[in-house]
Amino acid sequence: MNMRFAALGLGLLVLSACAPSKSLLERGVAISLNDPSLVSQPVGQFPPRFSALIADTTVPALTLTVESRSQTGRLLLESRINGVETWLSSDLSAVMLENGMLQGTRGVGSELFAAELSEPMALILSGRTGYSNRLHSNFNGNEEIVIHNFRCLVEFEGSAVIKLEIGNAPTRVMTEDCKSSDQSFQNTYWVSTKSGAIVQARQWAGDELGYIKTQAAVRRPA
Image (cartoon, rainbow, N blue to C red; front, side, top):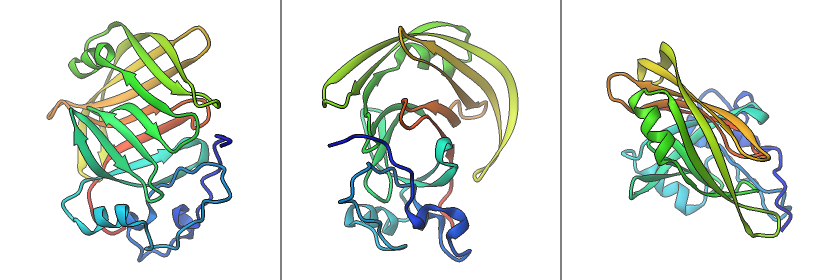
């Protein structure tokens, strides 16, 4: 399969094209491959796997913005296994987060199969500055796993009160500046000073997808 990332052109996802009465849960961000066999689903008509999450009102929601496409929508929490959360979109693609940090992707093109984040995570969650290592395992176009080793500088950038659906959140802002032999990126994390959790993040998801922004959200109509 040609794993080129396609524009997120599903009509149900474009916020400006949705009627105001539609729930944001019916606009779930879909991240699709450039594959003509994929057919957009009309608003409110989702695969059973995603529909089951919508029906269960106890399932948490997460707001996801794909910066390269200027599109925002909802993901729903499908599972939490060994600390890794799988957040599902309406087209059954997904992102995996560990304590709010991007652990993997599925269905977005050049997949981030997994990431080793223990060193930067310890610094970010504790608010400490220092150097750390992270490791990415990516699928390439030949469906082979390629390992990337990054050296990262984590820094405390100050405090900020950010506006979220869950309310105003006092946070400390942490940046993570990473470089490998052929790639570089800078992630930013907003860590709640009350709960110690990452409530907002801007993270690099690979060359094809670019940066994504996640925010803690509530389940409510738009």
